[in-house]
Length: 90
Image (tube, rainbow, N blue to C red; front, side, top):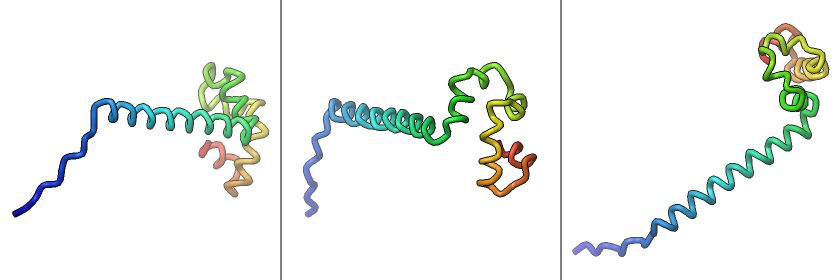
C-alpha cells in the first residue's frame, strides 16, 4: 500500500512574501548595476543619461558626437576592430 506524504502547507501569504522578496532582489540588482555602470563607464553614462543626448538624437547622430569621442577608441581597442566596425557594433 502506498502511503501519501502530507501536503506541504504553503499559504497565499507565503507565496506573496516570496514573490515580493524576489522583486526586491531584482530591483536591488538593477540599481547596483546602474551604479556600477556609472562608475566603470563614466563618459558613456554621462552621455546616455545625464546630458539628455540620447533622448534628443538618433543613434547615428550619437556616434559622431563630441561626448562619445572618448568612448569609441576604448571600445575599438577592447574589441580589436577598426573605427568603422566599432561604430557599427555600437
